[in-house]
Length: 360
Image (cartoon, rainbow, N blue to C red; front, side, top):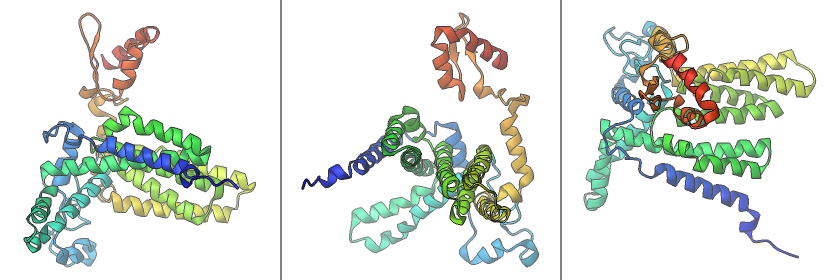
C-alpha cells in the first residue's frame, strides 16, 4: 500500500503557509521607508491624533466611566460621557476611532516591559532593549508601530482571501486568490502605511466570511458574528455602510434556502445581529454617538469637501495638465485607473473629457 509523504498530503497548507510568510516578509520589509520624516499625510494625521489620546490613572476609572448622572465628580473633571472633556475623544472623524484606539493601545502596551529594565541590569543588552521600549508611544515611533500593525493585518487579508476562495469554490481557487493578493504591489504598498485601508479590508473580508456562513447555515452564533464584524468595519471607516446590503442579502439567501420564513426566528436572529453591531460599534467608536454632531459634520466634510456634490472638488484630487495636453499630475482615487486609461489610445479621449468636465 502506497503511503504519501505528509508534505504531499498537506501541500495546500504548506503552500498557504509559504504565501503567508512571503506576504509578511514583503510587507514588513523597509517599513521606515521615509526615514522618520512622516511623509504620508493621512498617516501623519493619524499619528498626531493618536499621540493626544489617553486615559486617566486607573484609580480614577470608576469616576471617569461613570455616567454624569451617577457621578459626583466635578464638571471640570474628564468623563467618558462628556465628549468635550474626554481624553478618549479623538475630535477627528474622517476615519473611525477603532484604528486610533488600536494603535494607541498597542503602542502603550509595548512600553510596559520598559519598567523591567532596572531589574535586568546584569544583562546590559536586554536592559537597553527594554528601556528603549519607552519610546514606542512617542510621536516618532507610533508611526512605525502602526506600520507593523498594518503589515500584519494585511497578511491576515491574504488568509481571509484564501478562506473565501476555498469556501466559495475550492482550495485551489483559494490559493490562487491568496497568491494574487500576496504579490499585488498595491497591497504591499498600502501595508507600508498606517492608514485605515488594510484594517478596513480585513474587517470587510471577515464580514463576507461570516455572511457566507450565515447564508448557508444560519444560526445564532453566525448572526452575532455578522453584527460584530460589521460593527468593526463601520468603526474603522463609515464608508463600510454599503455592507448593510450584503447583510440583507445573507438573510434573504438563508431563508430562501429554507423554503419558508419563520418570522419569530428571523426577528430573533436580526435582534442578535443588531445588538452585536450596536455594542461593538459603540465600544470601538463611542464618540460617533456621544459626539454625534461632530461625527456627522466630519462625514459631511469628507463626502462634500469644497462644495462639490460628488465630493470631487478636493485640491488633492485635481487633475494637472501640461500646456501640450499631457497629464502631469493627479492624485488619489484616479491615479491607478487614470494611468491605465490615459495609456490606452481608444480610451484616452473619453477619459480626459471626463476628467476635464469634473476636475477642470
